Length: 241
Length: 286
Image (tube, rainbow over all chains, first blue to last red; front, side, top):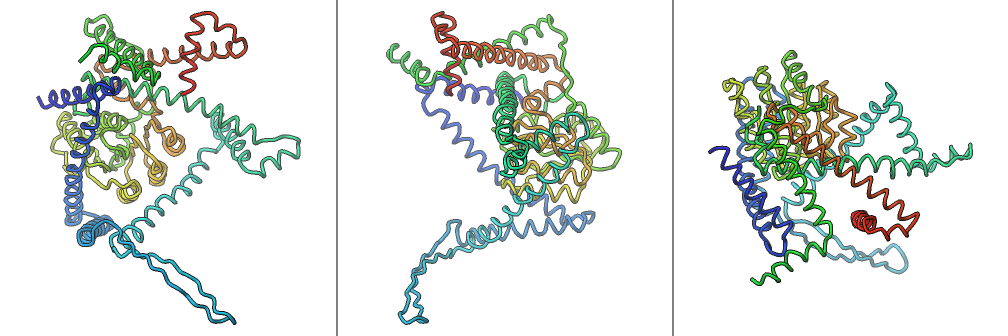
């Protein structure tokens, strides 16, 4: 029964969604009801997630075998979590922006120059300090790491170790040179224009490959969905082999 | 309800959106083929099928074995999407196999997740895998734990775990976005053998550049069937191939008829050519 009930729920919900997709005028807003249930269940599951995070972090902090680095990371995590919850509960999560208009008079000249300064300030420490001053810069810092990782990964990918890697290097060089003005300038010396070749590689060869993968992914998605509906696929319920 | 009105309600969405009919046809075709093969297997008429080798899946044993020899843990990342994403479900299907191998080889297993529903499902899967391997004594409740729903917060957390724990193998299987390369490059920096799998077209080049083995697109969905010994599981791969063949034939016929039509519009007078041209034009316009 432990597996049959989840399989039955999966089949019924899946069928409702499929019928709603193909007969939208008759079944009306059934999908919306299922989606609302999904949101409610997910909201309750977040509490489970936070509890798990606190328990695991506390255990790691208190265990004597935990490495010092790991212990510091877990202490920082717990303190940040508590601070965010407390500040959020006290001040709320909506920004309280105050806009002020200020007249500034500059008397350095023969005639005074009056300028207007419009400034806004967020009075809520949750949004102004935790969200805009800590969370946003940290997220941006993580995202910006990507630039350096792209450089190192490209360096490894473009090393001409075998025929395939050499072809990749050749195609990438054309695309890179075709995307910058200096590419056409260099190849213009021998009467060639590289930007159309770069455009052709991106718009035709690359797009064809991508579409092939997309079509196969679409079919794969249908197959795995049918497997779930028919109860053939059960390894996500712990069946395995 | 009046039958005429009911028919109108059924029919009108198909007039407004012609692609809906093609979708229904493809779904019906795949369902019929799948059920025919299931019937063939159950009747004993089909006992074996040829499956091409997928190196990324064959290397799972090697990756877990390497971790065992080096005394390092296995890190499994199921992507950053929730349980309603089909790639996450495909990843959880593979998780069952990987965690069972870890239990058999007595290798530590770490799985930080970014969605709490995925965490609860993954905990059950890992627990059952350890039970199946007869090593329930090795299972710890904190093997699968929640980090954060935030994309870059999760990437930072996993990067920290990789740097501190230095896993011998990293599995990046599921739906990934911009964090894919951040995770894969950090895994590379600690010398881990990396097996990735995703159906996100934009992230595939990053995984191919930074990982040792990659499950490209549909291979991710074929993974559980490939690793299974159950014939009914395996025949879904055959259904997938037949469906792909149907799409390939449709592309070849459609593009040929359209190319001839552009060169000679008079060919549309032939009824069958006219129908094929209209169908392929509808699809091309979308």
